Length: 110
Length: 114
Image (cartoon, rainbow over all chains, first blue to last red; front, side):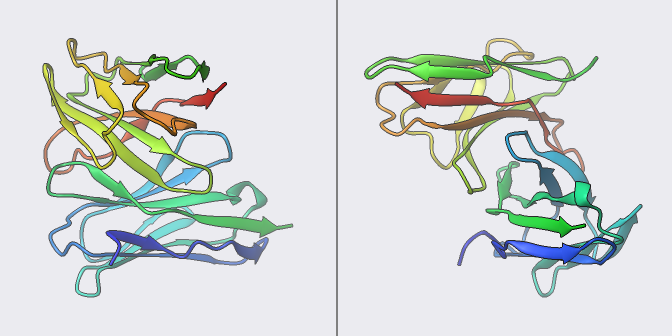
């Protein structure tokens, strides 16, 4: 089982819809979870982080964490064309560094 | 402005040559990292350092070397032993301890083989 798995996509949604991005992880000891957005040719930028079970909302973004199921997701409401990017899920490891998934490419269609 | 500066933006390596990628941060972060990203792939950890004069191998350290002589600087050398060096290299920094794992990235260096 991979340390962090994401649906590779690509995922296409119409403008204004909700985009749902999913991530599973294998280490039950992981405590911190991050979502990064990466535009083509650019470096990743942090958009959400979550430490506790449940939902965390920030503007149009909601991160959801279920440690029992080892599952973390990112919802983007009212998707905009500017949200088109690759979204990387990252999970902390016991050695105090982050392991990244391979990313999900999102395209928002105007 | 606080941030992480990587240079150069583009770098070309000849066969058998060692090249060094620069990474400087003024965020006063203790920890620094080097990741490699291949097209359509996620980030893979090469080396990381949580304190000056100490560093650890990541998942793909073979063919790379680093140093951490100053808190602000964490250069990466891609040696001739790295047979497939073409990739996008990302340097990052963070605080240390629980709740401080958020990584902040530099703008990256694209390395290509001539």
